[in-house]
Amino acid sequence: MADPVRAPWEAPMRLALEEAAHAPLTGDVPVGAVVLAEDGTVLATGRNERELTGDPTGHAEVLALRRAAAARGSWRLTGCTLVVTLEPCTMCAGALVLSRVDRVVYGARDEKAGAAGSLWDVVRDRRLNHRPEVIHGVLEAECARQLTEFFRDTRGGGGAASATEPPGPQTLGRESSVPQTPGSPAPGSGTAGEGPGSGGLPVR
Ligand SMILES: [Zn+2]
Image 1: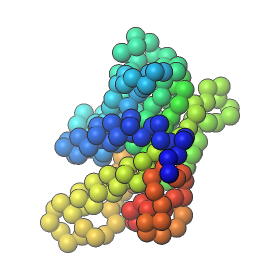
Image 2 (image 1 turned 180 degrees about the vertical axis):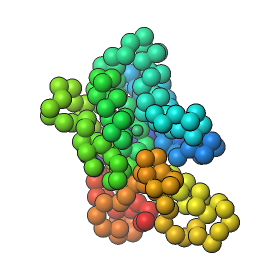
Image 3 (image 1 turned 180 degrees about the horizontal axis):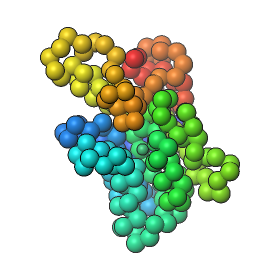
């Protein structure tokens, strides 16, 4: 049941997931990003390094955009696509608009801080004269699972009997972000790539 819109982005999303998987080694929330050139080659990758570097702007998307611009020798990333495991925040959405990327592809929605369709839609604000295309829900379940497992493990890591409690996003999250499952939490009722509201994500 290939989704013709999302299927082409699954391979780079897996790269982004691999990049994100390194983040917990430095105590960072696992978010990973990849910037692709027009022909699909990887220009740059990035992962959330806020804890590693002590930089409040050290989000995966910003770092990947900076590296892609350095690789290209220009801040203008026209024709490029940024693929990221979690819906961009307002800062990253702003950076994406400024970078002139053609397209933003993301996995898990961030209902609490997302700025590409959830809480805000900065990247497609009609008042802006550059609006990247947005494709969401690519490997959504895997992207959400990586985050929920991180928060579960972090909460449970101290040996306290609190692992089954919902994580405290205000103290743990990247901008208090924990992916939320929109709509019904019907177990196993959906697959990755079916779009917003599809089931099958970890129930919080
Ligand atoms: Zn961000």
